[in-house]
Every structure is written in structure tokens, then in C-alpha cells.
Length: 117
Length: 264
Image (tube, rainbow over all chains, first blue to last red; front, side):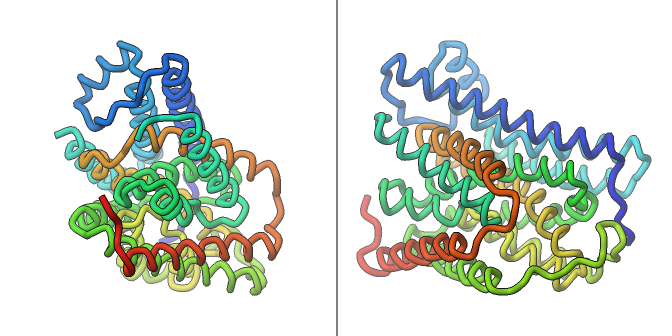
């Protein structure tokens, strides 16, 4: 197995997903935490709500709902990175690594599906 | 836990210190986040591990982006080994849910002790000179590498650490990957591995936004600070100081678990 790097384009796409995904999630988390102070609301003690409930909390500008959305975006960043890599391997017509990426992606999606039960 | 200024500042500082030392010493902040949250802030260890996993993703994403741009990451090898680390991580997080707080604390202390001694050893051994440039090597013993990666993923998912202390020697010594590439590729794999298990913790309600968000923001700030602060190998005393902290918390965590256990 000779290890060649992916194309430069593919590499910079993966790096961009990691960089901007994490910065974006940090901004959303920061907004939630700051809002918690500005509004003076106490942190609720419940977490793990359905995506629909979470979106309602976010739209109501619930501070911890927004922070939780930020955390979810943080967790989704690596998942998106795997998906982008799969597309990159597809463009390079590297079937073996498309399959490997899809394998990793399916473990992640199964884990997400479990968390949204 | 209600959100007070003190909590927020404390969690942010904890994250910043973990992120900064993580990027300076190359060992993720997971080793200090879990014990400090558990011992100093009274956060239940399962929630502390979930927080640590999120912080580990925060550290990994930024560092991995830099490593990829420097062409140090073997993306194909990383993706292949991630098949094993993600499965191991899911298994580890399920096992963690079944273990008592005390058992988890003792296991954590053991792995922190091992990671700490690896750091001390590495501080006194010259980093191997590289003849190989990335791309010119053959990956050896892939099946063994996959098994080891599965184990590393399991430990990561169970204890909320990155698992670099296992993956780097595995790739470098067993699989014949150059040291720098092994370090960068290990870092690249950490985010995906931690995410696979973090969703399981999330499902159990162990990811607490009021704890995780301030700590993770601190990690971002600390990690980028660390990356800009120092571009050379960290000094020996810094590594020694950091490993002393790791040892101290490993011992206190084990002491607490074996002594009275955790209340509540």
C-alpha cells in the first residue's frame, strides 16, 4: 500500500471544513453563553432534547439551547470532514477510499441516529 | 449546577490551560480536564468525560487543519484506521455507561499515569531524525494497526482522551510511519474518533451545555494561543511541569475513588 496524499484541492477543502466548522461552532457557543449572562436566566438542567425541540429553543433565543446547538455543530464538524473526504476520493476515482470513508461515515451516522432516538 | 460568573470563568480558564498545554506539549488536554472537573468542580465523572471529549474535538480540529496544510497528514491511512477507532470509540462509550464512577476514575488514573510517563520519557529522548519524507514509506502490518487503533478508540471513548499516546507509537514503531506523519495523522483521527463516542454520551444526557460550552471556548482560545506562542519543541521543564500536574491529578482521582468514592 503506497500512501499518496490526496489532491491539494481535496486537502484544502478538508482543512477548511475543520477550521471554519470549529470556529463557527465556537461563535455559536460563545453567543449562547454570553446571552445567558445578559438575560440573567438560570441554566436549565435538562439537555438532550429532540432536534425539533432544540430548534424551538434556539428560535426562542434560549441561551443554553444556543450553546447546545454550538456543541452539536462542534460534534458535526468531524462528520462533515469525513463526508468531504469521501467526495474528494470520489472525484479522484479512488473507489477503495470512497468505500472506506463511507464506512467511517456510517459508524458516525449510526452514532448520531442513536443520540436522536 | 447554576451558571455563575465564577463557574464560567473557571471553566473557560480550565479549557484555555488545557488547550494551550495541549498544543505546546502535543498531549491533549483530556488528561487534565476530566480530573479537574470531577475533583474541583464536583461534576459527575461521566459528564466530565463527555465535556473532555468535546474539548478534544475542539483541539483536534484546529491542529488537524494546520497539519493538513503542512502536508503532514496521511489522509488515506488516517481514514482507514478511523474505521477501527470509531467502532472502538462507540464500544468504549457504551462500556463507560455501564461502569461505576469509581471504576472509571481508576481506569482514568491508570491511563493518565501511562501518558504522563510517556511524556517524561519523550522529553529526554531526542526526537528521531527523519530520513523519510511523507509519501515515500510503505505502511506495514495494517491488520495489527487496525486492532491497535480499535483499542485506542475504545480508551478514547471510555475515558474522554485523544488516545495519541497509543496511536503515535503504534504507527511509528509497528506500522513504519515516519514520526512526524504519525503525530499529525493521530491528531487528524482524534476529532472523528471523539465525535463517534460523544454522540453516545449526548444520548445519555451527559453533555451539559453549561459545562461544555465555556470549557470548549476556552480550549479554542488556548489552543490558538499555544500554536502562536511557540513554534519550536517545548522546553523540557514545561513538559515536566505538565506531566507533574497529570501525575498529581491521576493520584488524587485514584485516591478519591479507592478511598471514599464519589458522593451524589
